[in-house]
Image: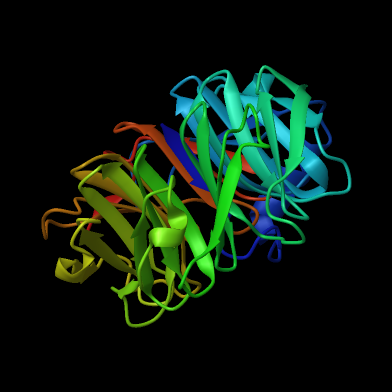
Length: 342
């Protein structure tokens, strides 16, 4: 199972950076995806920075394998590409005039994305226009989605959660959770999902019976931006404002441990992905990737990338491969070697 959701600030972009702007403008003038190789600042290992959606705004990504990623964003755009060969990226419009906020791909042949207002679209990323659509969260925007299998997904917007079968979305149940605004959901097993909210709270629930969930546990003093659960008994949440990584067992979240891994960020933490129980990578609004061991206090590895707008979302399908997206570019790198130890 591999999931990833939209960045903290949706699809808004920041001002372009001087020299990078000139390079991006030249690349945008070419047909299809264009590739430039740069070195992360302070690092030794090149990272592929590729314009995969020249005229679009991506905001979420999922990589069900090391050879396939699917990104979604504004105006119904969907981009399927091999992060190792991004020149062949395919851009499709699967939901024109609507924003796609998050995406989860339980297999290479099936992805589910959340769109406004409150809809979910399920498609094969190889043939993205052959999609199904259903209203599962009536009248809501900005939803987040996680899929534990081909037949079970959980989506949430504000504090409402719905569990549904993406292949038969009429089969669904919804509940109002006692959380703040839900930022992300991760489902490490068929009977367990974890939601984190903008109040620093964590709520573990059974997606088959979301109404039975209790009160959230506060695990961060400020707000949480994202969560990833590499195993059923380990989850890692990241604090947006304080750059903290909070590691906890979802069955006993009150015993969570926290340490600052990205305290120097000026813009805030955006997303986190954990390909193993001992390795996680987060991205922030300063175009940095920070790789760390959530079970130890070892030094972290920090890489900074030259991209044209804020990084929006991250997916790490393997311990030696991560892909992040900004509005139009994808950055693929080895989190074990990119950047410097700090």
